[in-house]
Amino acid sequence: MRIGLAIAGFGLNFKQDRPGIISVLKRRYGPFAGRSPGTYRFSAVSLPAAQNPFKPAVLFDGEALSLGRGDFKAALHLASGAGTLAAAPNEQCLDAFLRSLLSALLIRCGGFMLHSAGLVKNGKAWLFLGRSGAGKSTLARLAAAAGCKVLSDEINLLRPEGGRFMAYGSPFWGEMRADGRPGRWPLGGIYLLKKARANAVSPCGSAEALKLLLRCLLNFEKGPGISGLVLANAAALLKKNKFARLEFSKKDASFLDCV
Image 1 (cartoon, rainbow, N blue to C red):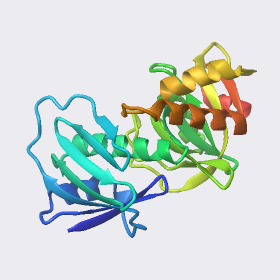
Image 2 (image 1 turned 180 degrees about the horizontal axis):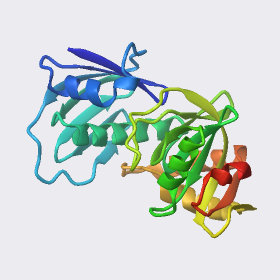
Image 3 (image 1 turned 60 degrees about the vertical axis):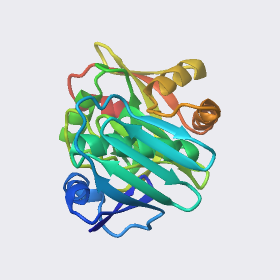
Image 4 (image 1 turned 90 degrees about the vertical axis):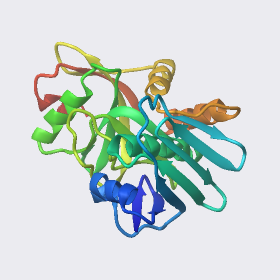
């Protein structure tokens, strides 16, 4: 059995003799499944679920990524695109695998996986960074009720293309629990989300923006060189895109007038 996934501009192909992992991928990532460019190819086998999976860990030896936690183990040779995956055939495990894989791939192409709410307005993507409780899911629900396309209320995917950053539809959601919306949109700007009594936009300095950007970045990798890559990506994003602070009242969708 086989399945191809297209997420954040990456083609991911999986094959397995038995249906376990493939069946879960088809069910969980249906909107992103179909014919894929197949940049990366994984041979998969099923494992029993682990009792204590813990946080994923990613290592890079100069040629291949090694990814794992208690319920999965994977390796991917970046030059050849050949990989292996041994994983428990359940959604929680495969979500953790794909988040750790995509985070590592995005960082290497100049991009990010960010804790944020993302929406589309006037043909552009706008991201709202915030710590837990800042109102990301509330903002996303209000935007959806007002007719905006929501990319995710929890994790959004960015990568540079043709001199600008593009936001991709995300299969990773929080409280809204949506399946995801495939597609790509030019990034319009990024707001730092803050609770307030009334909606308002104010400037923010580069230091403040960088601090929250790094706090909201999903990165499971340890090892030499990764910090330099992340900082270089952040510098490029800060240079090419508008950052501002959005004070958000959580009352209604009137905050959209500020975007």
